[in-house]
Image (cartoon, rainbow, N blue to C red; front, side, top):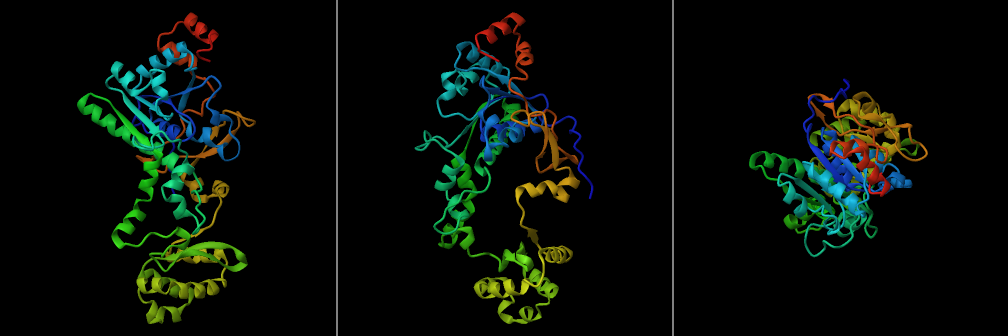
Length: 403
């Protein structure tokens, strides 16, 4: 298998674009990361004491290094009038400004779309919120909040046990949709010469994700059951516990695959049984068929089944934990994991592998050009670029407007 090159596409699609992001946590930084990986100069505006995700523990330990690569960092105190003035001057130099604060926050500092677009009508302003404008817009949103109220937790958990998805799906996708909106607005700006505000929201993102289940109800009149209790569209499409108690996902999603499945495993009697001749017939008898399959499949180990299914072209998957993906032969062979230098914490200065975007451009993976920045690493260079003199810089630092 050939490895996709990590040499940057030359030029990168968004090279020459300046993005200033006033973001924190996951949603806003994801938008900036998308634009940064695609070549934009992305400037992360942080508080004097830094984005708080730099120092999160547990499930949040990977947030900052994951979503802030290929960015520059400037530390500005927006509560300080001098700092807010610096931020406005920086934002005036941008093609895109991104933020993900509560409604009204940016307006307090003159950093809202109305104020900034009056200075720069070509500005694209991407606001990431919990909810689009409406009755809920002033509620505080988290990924869990919108998963619970938006049907995703209901669909993920067992009946009576709503469960959030195992990663920050709405935060990440909400940021991605913000970036998609920004790129669409940039194309339109190239036609009209005018910028615009783009809004992306967690709740609406979540509703989009469960839209297929909503349409199922609209079309069939039957409400979608939680995934562990769903009526599957395919009869063989499940996790099986096989020899030595190891689990593996196995499936046969067409009539042709059912025949291959039976031939592969020597289930001639099931293949010949007229009750199982079509997928829909097998689905209707799934409660009868699956126990038979579960018992028979214990004759093989998970590795044996994987080898057999791969050779036959049948869908299968080992059940893995995230940390096991560091040893995945496909990711290692295709350049899907790259080293970054950790900027904070006990391992600051050490390297760890992170994941790249799951696509290539002209045969290249979009790599890491800039390491996740240390706090304020680019403050001096960026302010000098805006015309601040050494004495003005020193005065700003003395007043704690910047760091």
